[in-house]
Length: 609
Figure (spheres, one colour):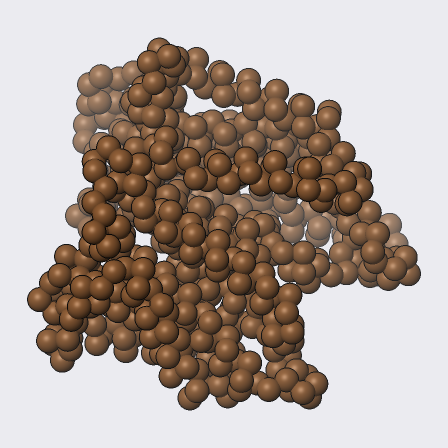
């Protein structure tokens, strides 16, 4: 016979504890696999020369440190209840993550991993075993014969220690934990941007000395790291104590939207945007122009995908139409057919892209879901193959593409001198900025119009939308045509920015990047698209050494956003409500919005509970 309710409860408690410890071990294994992956694919070794804090912390070391701390944090969250269990779980998970690297040091030379994994070299083993950290100049002193170094246990011990720190982080109050995470993130970001900031500040004699004291050529100096941490702490404490967001929300909407407040704020923001390229180098200005270009195309796809819910993976086809139209009508190459001004060709490129949008939309209007994405993907691939084929070589240059495309001002006979504020990529930035402002205005008007509401209805349920009297063929066709028009405008600006159109630029990656921009920024949100372009396009361009791992970073970013921020970094109000419908508001979000009925708010809160 069973031992009664007490024995049953004890067995249930034991089963839950065993399940929790099993999750701790699984977390340790996963983070250990992540450490091995980052090490063997070359991430750690490649970025060992890129420093966060000059002489103390490199990007490669930072990756391993974050993996160990993350293992400890997750292990503490998975461990059974109780402070002691949390610390033990964190230490065990961190130990397992570090032990994976210890096993690599032990088994790597024996199994001759360098024969089929080029990154598994003696230098990598020295790095993981802590040769640089321990200050060993002759690394052979660390090795017993040719088998393994006598410090092979070093990663496991460090992993357990860092895992314990991650567990302590999980035990801290939320405010303290947020402060540590924000301070660490700021330190990493400033360390990565240190070289760019230093080069910009050295151009001004008044602050060049401060720039040398705070920033090294690669990474922050120690005093610079202290200054960054101090500023973050002060700003965070001021934010917590003053609560500007709460105070702002307490101001009546009439006062917040008063022209005396809106106009000066808008003027300051506009002035900042206009002067932004002038205070930077040509490289930074070209990156800003590229971000503006992708934001421009993102706003176009935001109509098709964000409003109408039609996933278009052939967006690059309309981009190619706009680019080749400008190249053919403004260029001076062999296949160019005219030398028209850039600003005259822009409407032609938009109309040509709209025509192709209608051509694509008509045969696939009855397709839904994944089949629609596959159909549009096929259309995009057809255009990409034709652009590099010999069939159209007499018309669009074939694999060689079209070169000698003048800048917008040069096409109307205005040459910008080297020192002019419109020289280089700056004029493309302003063209992209004006185009983006026009498209944003059109997108806002369309979103709030009857057509925009029809698109949203189609996105929610096509059958219901058709039952309500919405013409699906006409409405979908307009969505494709307008999205294609904006993509054609983006392609036109792209051709002017780079001065040439190459078939290698017409690939599926362009469509994928624009979709990623919308997902990370927030579907249906115009500010979110701009923020997504900055994150997805601007940051990788500023860190060219990360280009080899760009898609790995994109994948990690998408997983993090979908897991913790499914509505995007800066979603629209509608998107936020849809993603969090039925959830209980958190402490940070405050109570339910005042425009919701009390009964509905109570029902939503009860359902979420």
